[in-house]
Length: 184
Image (cartoon, rainbow, N blue to C red; front, top):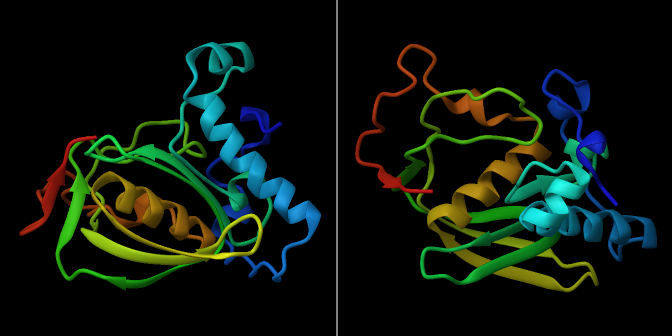
C-alpha cells in the first residue's frame, strides 16, 4: 500500500526526469504499481481511511512521485456532471488538444509539493488522451474541465514538469486571456 511516506517531495531529482516508457505487455510488478497508484487515490478520498493512514487527499498520482521513473499515472476524480473518471494508465499521451485554454480558479496543488503555490496554471480546455489500462488494453479518453486539467498535470510529471513551472512568475494571479475558469 502506498502512503504519504512513499511520495517523494519537491526537489527530489526523480521529479525532474523524463520517465521511461513501460514495455507492453506490462510486467506483474508494473501492474502492481499502477494498481497501487489508483488505490492510493481512492483511499485518500475516503475520510476514514485517509485519517487512519495519514493520507492527503489526491485526485491524481504519477509513478515518478513514488520514485518510480516510469510512464504510469492514476486519476480518480468526479467530472462536472457527476461522472467518475477513475483510470490507471500506462504510457498515457495527449494525442490532440484544443486551442482554447482553461485554468483552475483555485490554482493547482500536488502531493509532492507541501506548500501552497498561488497562481494560475494554463492548461488545454479539452484533450484526447491515449494510454493502456492495467491489462495492456488501449484506452482513449476525451476530457474537459477538471479531469482534463488533472490528466495534464499527471502527464507533466512523466516529463519532469511541475505545475508551478507553468505559472507566470511576474504576475501569478493574472487571469489567462480567453481561457475558461474552472471551479474545482
